[in-house]
Image 1 (tube, rainbow, N blue to C red):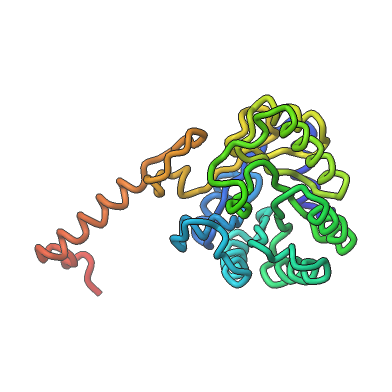
Image 2: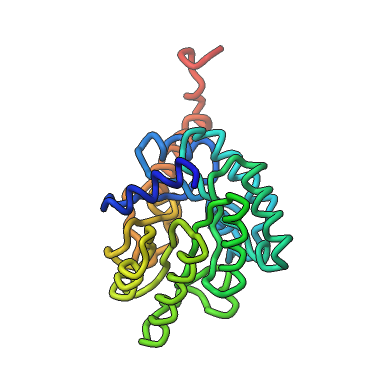
Length: 265
């Protein structure tokens, strides 16, 4: 286990609450690390909030490599985790290992994240462990499974579904995952999962019982102001700030106020 992974896990085990946010470029990576987050997730949510896709499914390996490398350049000392996109780890074990390994090699990320808790994913996690590639798991609502799960459906509402999620979390830990994202899971079930494993659980729409939380940065900052899930708390309203600033700039340009002598060469 690498030092950054070990420190992250140790914080969770001693009861520290872990704050994780997404970032997709060098600028915001630097800012969130200066703000003191415990980890930066280069999420395939980049497809939604940057590329304008309706889902994460079109996101490619090339896109994730580009954004992860940018994040690493902006935050050279941060703990960086990168999502492996749709299908890239489900087309045979050898191909999955090669792609995950290359993601670490090409970007300088510390770990990859894989969605799902089924046998194929746990086999891949175990094999990646043999290659010394750290893996974060992800269960509950998994956006790459939108075609079968639907969008935004809470997972684990029935006793049988809850039991399956607890079992999946245990399988992920047994396979070697160092942490698990729990997305859109009832808080009581997330609490059960957190108690059933010894590794950190990172919630998003899963209540306060998780070891830590993750939010998509443009949502947290209020830049993505058309997205209104119940679990989201906005800590700023930067979409209004951006519109106001650009409106003021455009107005000054049109009135001949900017640039003035002060802003000349």
